[in-house]
Image (tube, rainbow, N blue to C red; front, side, top):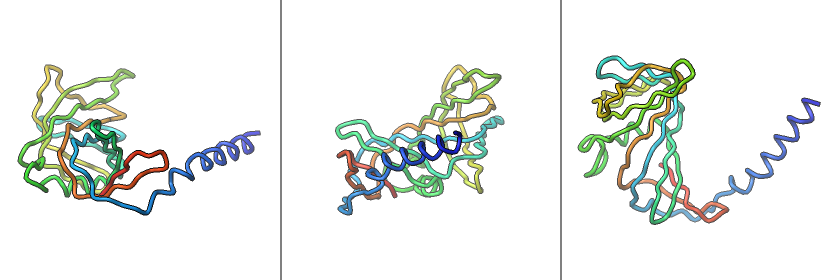
Length: 168
């Protein structure tokens, strides 16, 4: 029964995902937008002014709200490389970010300013400046929601459902 159920789930997933994977070959330049980013990691360690994300996902998810809702992703390595790109780069105007971690089964949330990312394997380290009353804490199941960045040198294409999907 388990094997049949697993096969049915896989077949159903492929039936739904196949049209989405068939992206349009017509690509366009990434429109200027206020992109927001999400990075996920197995754990976060906070030590003074350092935030270390261990087991960070190899991709950074990105999305934009209005005027056109767009989605995208890039490798985390590409995200770090782009830190200094453009006249409005994160290096010149460090982003705010919300760090959410799980400690003893409860979510702990704090707001920080990020700077100077360094990626080594699946470990991503940022310098941080605390912006909220709640100090960041070390914990598991870390999510980092990074404030907007305007622009992007990437490419976009229309997905099967009409929305733009972008990446570098």
